[in-house]
Image (cartoon, rainbow, N blue to C red):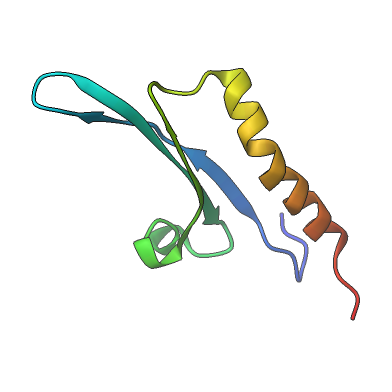
Length: 86
């Protein structure tokens, strides 16, 4: 089910843990937008993934922290949904 002329994205956040010689140093979590209008075989190719931000911290963000970190992106996408008139 798609509406002609619309774009569909999915948002992925996946935390990675950076390790030193013997200890865990930090958490790195890229915020990625995946363009769902591409065929499945093309969606996750590096050239088709948009990194909207990177969350750095001493540990993985909690659900509440993630909510606040994603709100600016969600608000921008909601504005784009309304469209721009030139």
